[in-house]
Amino acid sequence: MMNEKVRALLNDQINKEFYSAYLYLDFSNYFSQAGLDGFANWYKIQAEEERDHALLFYQFLQNENQPVTLEAIAKPDKIINTNMDVLRAGLEHEEYVTSLINAIYDEAHKDKDYRTMQFLDWFVKEQGEEETNANDLISKMELFGSDPRGLYLLNQELAARVYSAPSLVL
Ligand code: MG
Image (cartoon, rainbow, N blue to C red; front, side):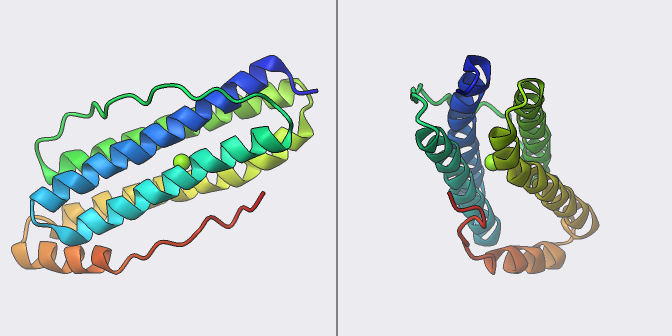
């Protein structure tokens, strides 16, 4: 039987991942309105990934025969004035999500819940990648973003991103 504290944290993570999707869709909307369709594409795909994460937590609880409760998704609340604000908010958010995944892992570990730990292993790796991607984007923006031609090329690069389903299948 799954520990109630672990279950509640996994259940809450469904909501957090949907919030992430909502936040990234808001970022995509910002860039769409700014005319940077490549950045808008990149964040829209990011939103799709986050929705997939939410569904993975949902499916894991279902597979474990655990009850699921869906709560209201909060309004995206990041204050955005510049392009760089978005990128920095993205990194800050991923660091926060990493701390959430680690906290669930910590509870599962305390309870010797090896199945949940194994499920979370994929997310531990994923969070490393998310933070790297967010950092890389900030670095590129710092290097090239202040030059209109640099920004144009970076926008083109981000326009090439395509959606792919998560490698974790439950
Ligand atoms: Mg996620």
